[in-house]
Length: 388
Image (cartoon, rainbow, N blue to C red):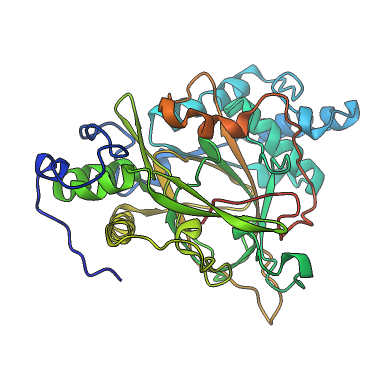
């Protein structure tokens, strides 16, 4: 735990500190306001219930995809045919809530459809195509859909011994973070919640609330986050990890955007940081601690039911997960599908200097892989994850 406490220095005093004139921002954005600034978010504000008719409409669209033999990578609004135009409008309107509203939306009711594994992937991709038209692709190996599950009981291949399990395959708790350069919106489909009292509870926190608090009480934390000297370690298959410097806080048109993820900065017990990598500075460690403490203060437990599709603004909302476990020494049955998305109609502008980083997952023409069964816990195809 850091021994630092929140500073009483004013923003102007902090801006005159010894931080680098090259990498620090000219000025911090003023305090932000609106529905995306919240502390405790009531589920009634973000859960959208599907009617029995709407669930059947989605099921019908899935069947049409299967009959037509449409590849999962080609699922779009024009190939995932929702006969009910009101349902289409309902799903399209979710994007506005994610970009201009609270930044969190849960679509509920699909568990009643009783989809098999293949149908669930088709339904997930189809529903998401109405919310956000673009799906991100891991530039390392064309991975679009990942399976979040427990792979800790599986034998580690020799080639993967120095990489470790992907963050989405471990059962350990994950501190508050935003997934770095992965996509504007994170979408998660709850196929199996793991059962009662099995752990894995999810929490979300408004970074904009955190930002406002730090701007008033410890603006130096924000300046530290905005400096482009954070040492991210990126693992590689069959190669040594490499170092990539960058900020964890970005600004564009007055919007603060957080891309703070701890695993590539400090490592984890299962994926330790390579000893050749530089360690964080005291100011960076203090920033990690300050943001995490405020996230715990401002967070809310995400209301979750089996079959839910969760949407979270990955630029303004931080998320965390508690540890989870199986029973009788068996792996946990908890299983979520994950994709990263972008809606070109509502997407926030990105700072010019790092626009390529934000845009890379959405490179046009890249093949998309949406696997029904997960056989890649060691990232043979899913590449380097900046998650967790």
